Image 1 (cartoon, rainbow, N blue to C red):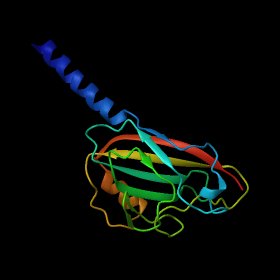
Image 2: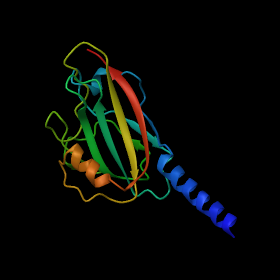
Image 3: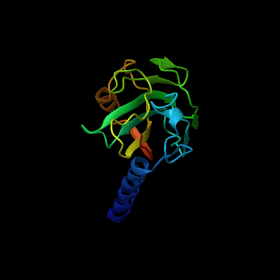
Length: 169
């Protein structure tokens, strides 16, 4: 009996661990940002593919940051309440707080929605796009900050995935 209970407990812990650590497949069709998705071009949001979302997920959230910014991490885009069945986010998402596919927050430029790579120097910067599968819709006000998004997501993340692309001027 004790052995059976231990096996059951281990199996349950293993399943929870797999749920929490299983990765989403997140991609963009480039490794280096084309200018159209940057401040040197049209500054439109890039296309994003998402695959492997857990069947228990209700929504997705995304965060795009520059990890090589001079003053530390710089937020370029945050969005949430993306339906979990979305596998493709098209380019050119409007820079409005609420759009058909998502609710958007304020980036570190002070704008709502996407603001593309715009490094202040000529070095190569890495831009990390993270997508999170969540077990609920977030009750978060449009235009909220990254810290507010992290706080709202706490305890609700089922999966995450990331993709890194670079840009230099």
